[in-house]
Length: 212
Image (cartoon, rainbow, N blue to C red):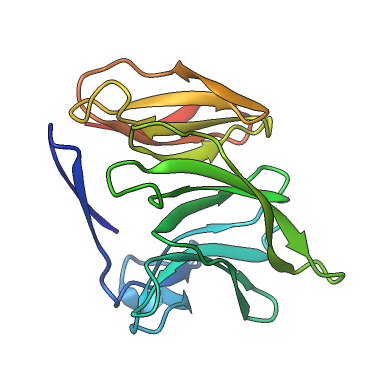
């Protein structure tokens, strides 16, 4: 995804090249060239990106944008290649990640407006064979006038972090909330410039993020 912001205005623009695909590479043989990449999802006729893999390695979760949609959430059952649209709603839904137990997802949506991205969670539904069939019990984790995006769960399965414009569009910071009681936000970073795209190590002791 190509992301552009206009500082101080609250206006944001995303570009969705239809050539975007999700690919995989074998790190044992990858040499940094396209020939060692294998396309998993996307055919060049619509933006397919922002992918993540379930903890058990079975399911690919991603965002798809095509002429008929503004951005929906899809899954691919990797053993069979079967794809399923699990969220089709007004606006753009993207940046999805699985919860640590693989039973739910967290993502952000602009259905409240371009300058008011909000974080949501939902539970997944499964077929008897373990493949994902849909989602249910969608819950808003944020509901304010800020831009809240790039959410990621802590390994404890309860807390999640995300980037937010809560202190200004020229100084994004990382915040944390409790998914069981998301009303209160705890500020994690406190530095000039944008701090976004947080993620945790598997043991939850370290956080990595992008800092401007």
